[in-house]
Amino acid sequence: MNLPHRMKTAYQKMQVALTAVVLVTMTLLSASVNQNSLYAQGVGLTELLSQEKPAGIAEDDFSALPETWKEWSGETIQLLDKIYGSETVPLAAQKEILEKLQQQVDIIDDAISDSEYAASFDELTDLRGKLQRRVALLQAVLVTLDENPKQHKALRPALSKLLQAIEGYEEDSKLGDSDNTVRQQIDAILAITNDNAEALQEAIRIYYFNFNIRVFVSEPFAESVFYECRKECGPVCDFILGARVRGTQHTKSGVSIDFLPGDETARFAIQVSGNTTSRTTGVTNQATIYTYGRHRFSGKKIILFDGDSFSSYRASLSVWANNRVTGAHLNRRGLLAKLIGDKIAYQKAVEAKPKTEAIAAQRLRSRVLPKFNREVENTFGELNEELNKLEQRMNKEKIAPDQKLVRTYTDELRTGYRLMNDGQLAADRPATVFNSKTGITLHIHESWINNALAIEGYNFEKAEMSFPDFGEQLAEKFRRAFNSDKEIEKAKDNGDRVIISDVDPVHVQFDGGKIKVIMRVGLKPNGRDKIIKLRRVEIPIQIEVAENSIVLSISKEDKVRVLPLDSSDRSPISNRIIGSKIRSQFEDRLAEKTLERTFDFPVDEEGDRHVPVVIESLHAVNGWLVVVLEEVEE
Image 1 (cartoon, rainbow, N blue to C red):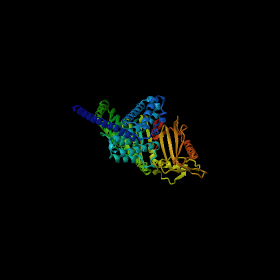
Image 2 (image 1 turned 60 degrees about the horizontal axis):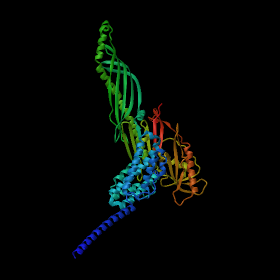
Image 3 (image 1 turned 30 degrees about the horizontal axis):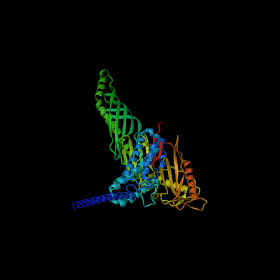
Image 4 (image 1 turned 45 degrees about the vertical axis):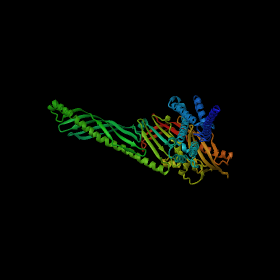
């Protein structure tokens, strides 16, 4: 009886153990199922992204790279397929893929720092910018999810809408016709996370809220513009140490500029240096002294620029005077004077040299310093007046920058301006690979033009007008803002009437080496009763830098794209008509727009001084139009 009892007890214990194992197994299976279920519902980036790669980083966008980048392109495309594909990818794998994509971007960074790859800088820079901001943004999304685990249910839809809004902006910059704008979704995410989305805010700030006009001025170019050499000649008429001094003096001086490091303001020194030579005769009752003077001087005035106005410190000037007595004689010419008097007079004049040099230095300082100080202050005072007038005009036209950045390095002045009104986005970081070390490099982001061309700034009097009137009204606000008096010949009116969209009727993109003009317009063709409804018409304009000119023309490689805005309007005939009409208008105007590469850079308002410059290169990449100007060597 004892044995069966022990067996029964053992069996019961085994049953309990088995039950425990089953329960543990079921728990693990349940956890696994729940985990898989979570992935199916969306973990990390799952179900937040479109299953198609965005415009700009799709497979075709890699085809512009040279053959040597084929392996890199293939690896990058495979990584993008995993992020944007339909296959469910675990969270850890998502993070690893984004890290590998960042490494691919780093490879481009290494390449564009090497002149060996200079021929491909445009294509590499264009693709690099589009990849970098997507990678940085998606990494920031994962960080935000990691830091807010309890808010996933409310957070994921908001993140999905944010990513959709950003891709809409990337593709077309059309912001005004939807409640799903980037700024609205950022506000929603901050409300859900109780402002715990720092990584996401930082990514948006860097890549979509940044300055959209950048100007880089090299010190050599600034020196060419600012340098001025002067030669002055005049009489000397003075009374020094009891002697009446007369003669002539010649002064040769140069004014230059020197950049000084400044993080929050631009700092530079306006420098003056030169020398004065004089030949004078000093006459007293007893003797006549002949003197040759050779004096050097050097001064500077520190100028500060905060983006709004110039200010300055008082100027300083150092003088090194040197007088040489070339002769002396007593005025009474008796025998004694001839024997020893002239020598005594000469010796007395030499002994007085330190005093005469101190007086000469003081006289030179009092003559040069006030004039130097006054001229520099007048120059920058006039610049302040011009800046103030420009600011007023830009405010009136609603295109004044809302943020400014200025700083100087020892060899470069950098300025940044941002135009970004409510509801708008701006730029990312510029690609400085094209920057000139001896000229000026101007970076204009498409967002500056698009924000300036916002419908709020148009104030169109009519919803429809002729092509010439439409073009003239688009340009008029810029002419007023920049006080341009350049006359532009009005285009020919063919009788067609443009119907203007009330949302984002015109904007541009700088992409793939081309300028894309996108219009949302309809058309009343001349001689036809039927109205062509609103369409999105994209005109690709190619840039050719010829030997002496810059030629703009409609691209022969890319077609004029026409898409109806109303999905129910699928008339291919209407598409062809409006596309042909707008293409014709652009071709007529561009035929007149062959631009001279060289022009005179004015140095003063009177136009007496100028520096001839040449447009060395133009680049339309990653949303930026980069213009490089160099001084022409005469």
